[in-house]
Length: 411
Ligand SMILES: Cc1cc2nc3c(=O)[nH]c(=O)nc-3n(C[C@H](O)[C@H](O)[C@H](O)COP(=O)(O)O)c2cc1C
Image 1 (cartoon, rainbow, N blue to C red):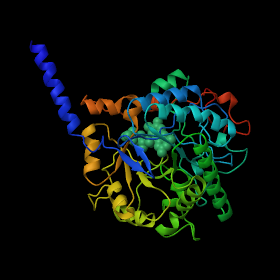
Image 2 (spheres, rainbow, N blue to C red):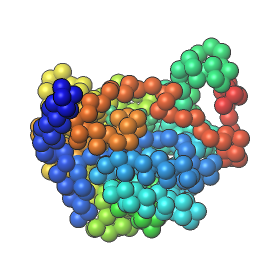
Image 3 (cartoon, rainbow, N blue to C red):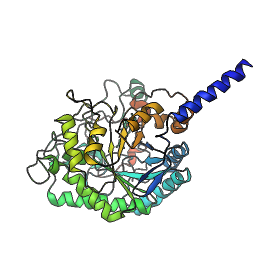
């Protein structure tokens, strides 16, 4: 009897929890596409594609499972839109550059739709942090200006992984060659490449695309004043620094029309600068938001590991709230949202219209169902040994690639 009562009480508490998340499970509309709730799966690079960038059956199963888990929107891992030099950032990264890629993405989009979610494909260009093995021999990576990334530990940094691969000593930090500043003609060509990739994504069945302007990659390198030293129309003022991202969104819109979703992802930090911050903090976020208010994106997407942490000691305003207010655009807020109540708070506090959930949905494909049922979810710490899997097939990596001699050979 006691067990019966406690189960009934638990059920009641769970109902109460569902009722306590009214915003999270309300439908949302972006560019005329209706989402069943306000939960997006954040883009997560997994390096599960074939060496030529073709999506695999493993990817179909991975995304299908997370759509069935209840997300309203799935944002795919960063994908390269064309075969231009330096566009592909990682080995085993998927592309949407060829007819073969389109054919292999189609079952992914279909499986996501069958699971009741909508799907957008994230398009990215690596810029100065492109893996050197993805560049033609001797080619310099490209960026906003002639700068050089300090590098980062690309794949893994845990002792267990090192042991598995027979590496003794510390993991080598991957270093990148000095980057060359893009010409205006090259900027235009890259924007056209994004547009062509977006058209192929729609052909593959996606509901739209996300333009990756965050996390240290090419468009971020233009937006961030630390990496953009240009003196032309693409450098200097905030308006100039967001010009490339705006151009990409505009060309993508021309390519895919008004009824497909375009989101633009932004962040303060990057893969080679995890503590990065915008000079000017929240005031800069407001200026960036204002400069993007009439851009062709339907929504902005804030990328971080802690959405409330604005890294600005002079303000309490979370960055997604500042960007949302200044741009007047819907906001997808991301970073450390692992409980239903936290998601609801981001929606209630005026910081977001949707939330994007990365590590929790990576670890728990049923995260939306779990928070809906009031089941507690354990915090998933960031640990490269489980979140980033090594590339599948190094031996068949791009034959044009060169491996710096000081890199480990055991990969
Ligand atoms: C393994 C891993 C891969 C990631 N890959 C991408 C990516 O391809 N594109 C992107 O914009 N962000 C990427 N991110 C960042 C996540 O989308 C997200 O911003 C981050 O995990 C913080 O959100 P969370 O606290 O919900 O996990 C990645 C993060 C992790 C941990």
